[in-house]
Image (cartoon, rainbow, N blue to C red; front, side):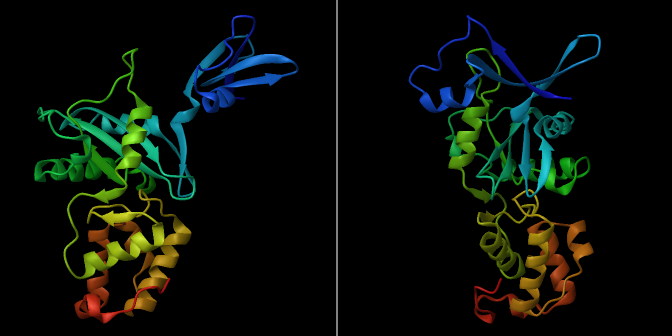
Length: 270
């Protein structure tokens, strides 16, 4: 049975200097002994072999689904327009979403601020292409809600990807921006999702499940479309194209475009 690997003995440190919160999380006492929680997963085989299974913090829960970040990154490795990438989870456990960072195969200028990631038309096209690539290889809920383009990925002193730095950057970039929704149905749906999911959706390619949605929230969203706009959307059709643009195209097949004008509805019906 897999479990977290702990290290004990006289050589275990007392903690992280100047970081009591991290110390309390990683250094624990059991039966009078001091242990260090490595954050690595492993298991023993009957012959006594200890197998390393990977990092425990690489599994996250988004919208009720457990996702292995390593599987998402493995799918990113086959994307021909990028030479490096990483995925982190941002937000709290109630409104958690995946955020992908990608370094394009063609160099980008490194004088841009990180917060400007995925702001240019070229970067937005790259982000959309990556989402399409991942959508063919992963379930909808595992496709990152946001993709940011960086000149390089931050590294730790040991030369590994600095996931803490990426997570911090992801928290700073709170808006799921990219290609802005068109006026009308797309903008109305983006506003509805923002209201329902608790994050600011400003990308017509944003994925409902990647932004923290789940099956129950999807049903609430379909109900809100009916109550607010008088449009009945088949759930199966939405699941086949769970993006702002995809849903907008679907609702326009089943409703009048005029009902999505800003003055045609009242907010707050969820």
